[in-house]
Every structure is written in structure tokens, then in C-alpha cells.
Image (cartoon, rainbow, N blue to C red):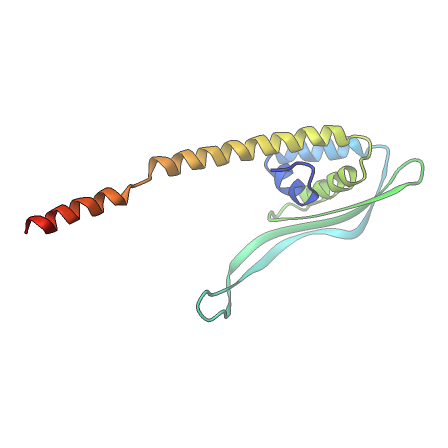
Length: 157
């Protein structure tokens, strides 16, 4: 997974310890003013899907959702915005992720520390993917051998 693509940042950062992300976001922004463009929120969202046959919508169920949109004002007056929406019920985590988004998108001081966390998240997700592939490989069944045996039985009768 590419750590430089903005669309991957939330997924990569949520793969590492949430407290670590929150502490780093707080540490980076100690000298900056944080203003909410939209108050951090958490709640439930309905997961809407379409059935495969008739393409009619149905609701699979509820999922936790938290979101935040922040604006950082640096000591020199520059401003940077960031936002995050995550499938979690922790609005503090959403706020930290929005701060990380602003820092990474604008290459602000501390983005190198966040890049390390992004790489840790990518490594963890890659390891999980390799583990899943190994588990899938162990459960692989070769059905072509089954068909060959059936064909031999038919010829004998």
C-alpha cells in the first residue's frame, strides 16, 4: 500500500496503536492553534447496499462512525486544513487523524514522524495480508483430482 497517497492515510494510521497516533498529533500541534471547521462527532451510520439480483437497496446494519474537520494555524499565520472519517466511535481519534491529515498534506513540521507511523501501518497490513494468503493456501483444494477419480469410476462400470 502506497504511504504517499492521501486516500490511504487513515487506513494506515488506524492500523497502528490509536493512543500513539493521538499522542503524536498532540505533540506536533503544541505550538499551533487548532480550530474546528466542524465539531468532531461520533455516532452510528447505516450501511446501505444493493442486492445483486434486483439492484434494490437494503440496509445491512449500523456501523460506528466518527469524523472531524480541523484547521491548524501556525505561528507564522499559515493555515492548513485536514479531515478524517473513520469507522470507529472515538471522536478524539478522528480529530487526531484529521490533524495528521493536515500535517501530512501540507508537509508541516512533524510530517516525518507521521511518515514513520504510516510505514509501520503499511508493514502491519502487509504482514496481515501475507498471513491471510498463507491461510488460504493451506485450505486450497485441488478439485481437478476429484474429477479424474470420478472419470475412472465411470469407465469401470
